[in-house]
Image 1 (cartoon, rainbow, N blue to C red):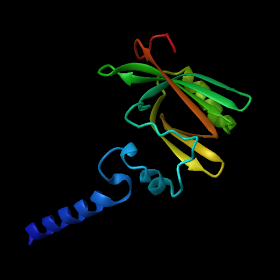
Image 2 (cartoon, one colour):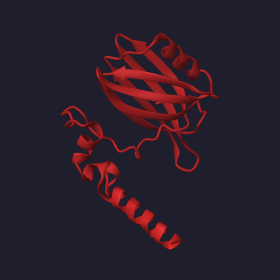
Image 3 (tube, rainbow, N blue to C red):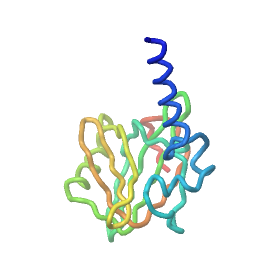
Image 4 (tube, one colour):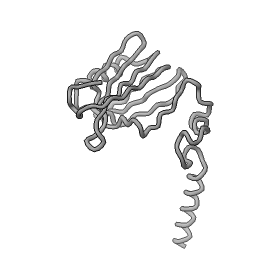
Length: 163
């Protein structure tokens, strides 16, 4: 009976993972219908999908913050010893950011003990939102309509050179 239960469990897992949602095999670009399944709408013409494996912000340090005239720029130091380090400059346009979230980012830029643990981009009623969870635990949200990402090689995790 135990063998039948395991076989049934494997069958159910294979069935659900083989053809549903964006858990199908291949990459995002292999299947244009992934956007529709994920967001339940067509992909806007002004959106370019960047694979998450290309730029990981996990364990990033905030290196700089600038917020003026509806634009926000955040510079992160990312990477590790094995893969190397890089600076990721995120620019948000038509941005909405609470004063508390802006102050947290500016504080984090001066503190090497604050790291980005997790982040996600999502659609919102006003355009897009970038949610970030930091250690020590603090969550912030950046609402925006335009976005730009620039990446440059960095020498090390704490060196003063910035892109």
